[in-house]
Image (cartoon, rainbow, N blue to C red; front, side, top):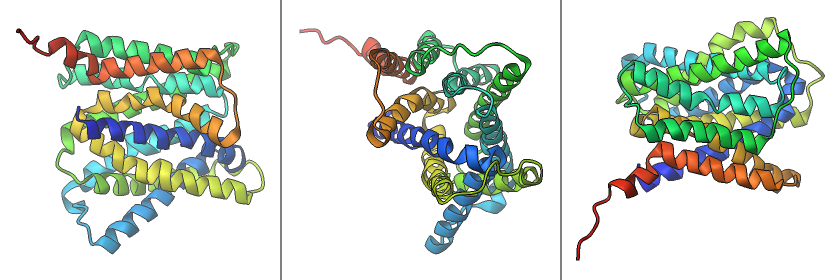
Length: 296
């Protein structure tokens, strides 16, 4: 990985870490279907408008059906499943399940023979998930049919991310990242729109919820997905999905800066474990191990 790739990885983690704050405000008011639809719809309008103003060729005719598939597996399915699961599960359990995305991405990549099962990647994924567990804390939710449904939804969403990332690298190489981001969000919004007639807003819509929804759509979805798709093409799905390790850490930082939340000593330890897991998966340590030793 290049330095610019690491910069984009941490930028993406910061953007998606902020999404937890926005969803925490919007979801209890607007509901899961409207949150999923809203973030995709807002991002699509923003990105397509920008592309039109700049007269940027998004290569729609060439990649339109591939954009549809990305929209389904990278946005429509996981956005709704995670939003719905978070109405059942605690935030900590949701974050841990979200952090399994690189594991799904690695397994799918190995099955497709696009990824080599190197020990440092496998260890890095496991260490990253363990670090996320320490950061967000132990979850003592009692097992029940409802909780199991929530866990299955979150796991399917994480698997969907793994499918989408491998598909993007394998089938959509050469497509502009702005085109992937814009049209995937447009098609995701269209796919999610029927759910709006089934799942209604939970309470009266407030200005605060609308503001959170706008920030979620513009920054944590629209701009973030341009960064994400560029990463997938450049460094592959497993490394790109390690951002899910970093998201709980950056969400913690946003909570401290914006909400004045306190950080526990265990969260410092968990954050360090997360960074070690990320370094293993992205090959930071491999650089030093394979670096030739200078002989005087």
